[in-house]
Image 1 (cartoon, rainbow, N blue to C red):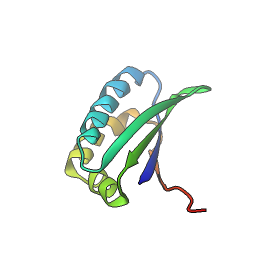
Image 2: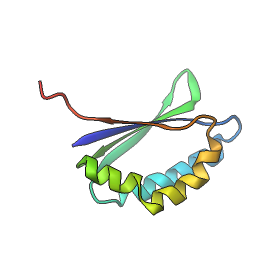
Image 3: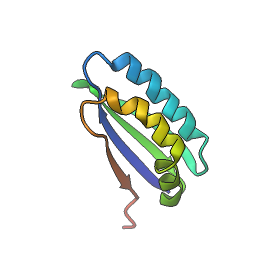
Image 4: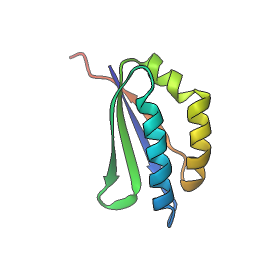
Length: 96
């Protein structure tokens, strides 16, 4: 299992539109093969900073979704609402 950490920063006054579109992205990701679970967190000190943490069966499953035409299309609506590029980190448990 891997975890994918996605950080996004929403442009001022676009929070409501962002929430609506990001829910749509999450709904589509839940239906993807290999998706296990996910949650979105809000930075307590910066409410426009969002972190999504999702669990995937494998990096291959995540990469299939990340590079899919479906996700790219959904992201065309979300990207203009962010004032910084999203950052994505692939994490795995330490074997120690």
